[in-house]
Image 1: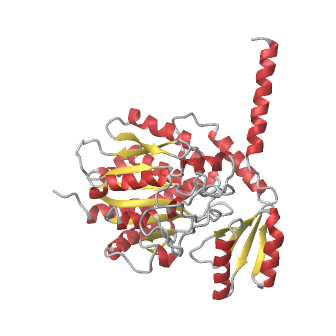
Image 2 (image 1 turned 90 degrees about the horizontal axis):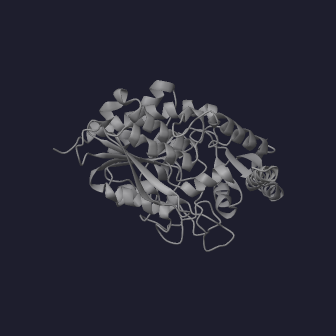
Image 3 (image 1 turned 30 degrees about the horizontal axis):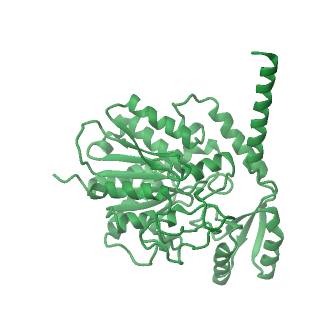
Length: 431
């Protein structure tokens, strides 16, 4: 290699590094406000603003099950108009963080440094937040390590042609048509702790098989660690707080759809979703117009006749959310679902004193139309369907540090294991 060739390669590396730095949104001078609505009228106003001001990122409270305050992330160009409105409406507020960019950069560097010690395809769940490609590399290694108990299938592709893979875990006895527990994660791109928890569940069922083999005696587990692959990858490469998919909309100024408003059961209701592509809860042009929601739909329908438990992992809030999200009424087996959620909540409080609230999504949080658990219960006839809002971490709630991962996922596993045990007890295989 000549000195000119070497110099050229060095210049290329510098250029590529510069491009990566320019691509990454640093959130310079983005501010975090805390708003304290003191009346129902003020709460209604803030809910309305969350719809009308899509560039004001309403994040909920730090521990949303017992706080009334709302956190709001705004760009420097939006601060003046926000303060003007809050002053006019006399809504109590304060600045929690004047510039979030240092936090974003510090967490990015912590993740990079921590993962540098790890040699793929092996991973350390506690040691970092992994990209979609890294997670797939890990999944692909599992059938070689556990040839009798792990099976990876390609079930579809994202809009940007990322492979969407499912891992099936069994006890290796080759019995067919067992009841199924299906778990997915990361419908919303910025909720990084959800894939981490999915990976931890995988390790508990494979690496810690002896401790958990009763969970696999009569049931198979199917796990999809990342649903919104494009959006999730985008949060690693470009914009940490991105939520939606990356498929363009009819509005060239706005990209992406909220996958959890894109499912074809009670899709399109304005109370719980939006027809405006600028909004974070944009539901798409029609149900299942996103390839990622199509894949989850296909999995639910594929296993419909034996799918006993569907669990969708989100963050944050310490909730077990049951159907329905689109209406204040309840499904016919709501009480049975509540008993499953109760098993998880009680196990967590006894183990760690962590408090989970549980009930229908409509009553516990807010209306949602076109969400995956409503579709699972209403169309796929899943016996128990629950959205799990994992605990908050970090400053904004869904931005935990790497050092937080272990505590969050180990506590959450206590609850999921207890719910799975309750499902297995209640719904044994048909002889």
